[in-house]
Image 1 (cartoon, one colour):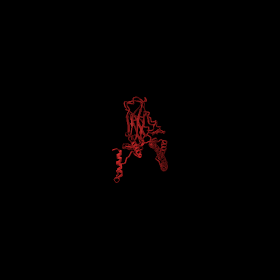
Image 2: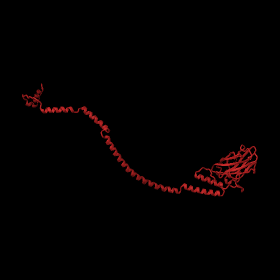
Image 3: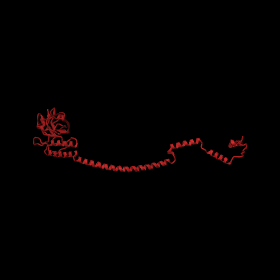
Length: 323
């Protein structure tokens, strides 16, 4: 059966059961409208999207949403936005920093006023001011004692001044008149060797070892006419207030040789209070064997050199005994 036969059957169906007729409809050609409609359909069918194409585009859509930064123009727009945000943030920060600076200035001014007042009050009663006043009084007292030829007292005051200033406890030179011996003879701190006691050469001249550079009464000179087999140095000394003093004793021979022969230190110095010392016998003597240094007749000098401690050494008697 051809397509024409199909059309006959179709016509019968269209007429319905109540319109059955024996008439045969003959169709020679398709309607122009149908032909045009079919052509349009066939043309559209060629460009119609398939399910695979739709799925592919949908996948591309999802991927594009995930990769915003790769979208056309995105980076440029974001850069412009960030720049605008940065400018706005800078403007806001500048504004609030300016306000913060005002608060800081006002607070700092208040703090300065508070502490300037406290500091001024403290300066009026500061330790430094009190110490300075005390130092000035000590200096005045030292000069008074020097004027009275109380060199021991002056050295004690000087030591106190050094403690206050934080300087090392080493006395500086004191320009004072020599400490007078019991007689009217000036203190040259020497013995000619003519005075002898217990087969020794003796000097009872009062001396002092504690003033740096002092050479007037801490060096004792002895002239030995004869030399025996043995020789011994004996001296009697004590501090101005206690035995807290350290030093070395040197023997200078006729040939100029200078040898340390003895030391003094607190544990070797024994005696009563300084004010209670009436004679050299009130203090404990310190002795040293100098036989190896005394080899020939001539002039020997005994030099006392203070090195440390709170006290100068008051020297009451020095002996060179030749046995």
